[in-house]
Image 1 (cartoon, helix red, strand yellow):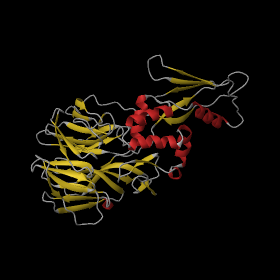
Image 2 (cartoon, rainbow, N blue to C red):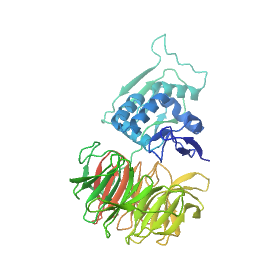
Image 3 (cartoon, rainbow, N blue to C red):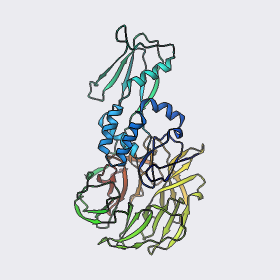
Image 4 (cartoon, helix red, strand yellow):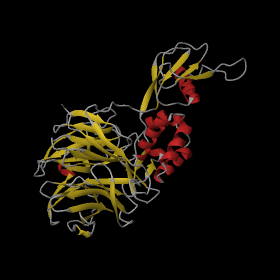
Length: 467
């Protein structure tokens, strides 16, 4: 059962579903918030508490993340947990996305030596306490007097891999092999069938730099539109990534999604829960898409059909609202029409009009799973696929974006990268990138364009997927 607590930044009501999350992302102000300790699962408290720094240090890391100071957050994470730069960057990205820390495993297999072949460091003292606890209170390891009874040796692997940690404990009774989870990071191989056509950008306010960019769209001429969330600007890039111009937008109008109606020359923007229409050639505001069907409304994500119908997720009601090109409401699809559905979060449409929705559903045991719901072009529920997990083919943490290519392949962004599925939900491949893809779109040539949480703009050739 979900528990509710208040966002300390905007006072919005946040829900914790009881999962293994250290943080959640506020849907109202998009800040990262630490889950109150009393709401974390008991197993979470036992497994992670001895291995994490004091909560004040974690709060400092979260504060850096919310201030957009990712480098500072990464450095503090690295210093606090004794991990490498790459592992620290991955840990910060997980916290920023509201995810729990992933784990790697440490094998304890001999009475004398503990070998940790790891990608992340650990607290040696905490490990010793865990070992002693597993053996029993009768085992005492002297730390002072009579010579050195305990020492740790940090050495690099001969093959140039990550350093191993060797802890020698003399005269210990035989310990059966067991596993201890420590903060670490899951790796997955990136696709060899995908070619990166360009990767550009960094955090900043100059042309070609991004400041918390979360939305993009691609015009029929290949021009790429990228909106910073808070800076009040929309940047236009040529198809090769060259910066063309910048449109100034209202700085108060947080931009979280963009869609382009190529046939009618209209740019749709989801800003502060409402939908606005802009002239695609000039950026001039044409007006707001009116919605009077319900007073409880906050639109979150958009998608367009080939004939210009606009689909939008109403996050308050967990519904999909379908508009015609003139802004008239044609249909409303509620999550409650699917018995297992809990929520709708993101949306995409394929060339045939099939609708794919990122959402959450209860499995047969009542556990919540990240899934993709599929609807027919008429809006009838057809099927669903996916589950939460840490392996390719399952969804790790928050699913941040979804897109469908001209072959009907489904691209889903999560912490693992951009996962690719066929139109029946069968896992095909994985694209790795720096950070988490916050938005994705395809150009007229079938190339995938993505903007990441690390303020990088990508374009990929995906034509060889499945070949």
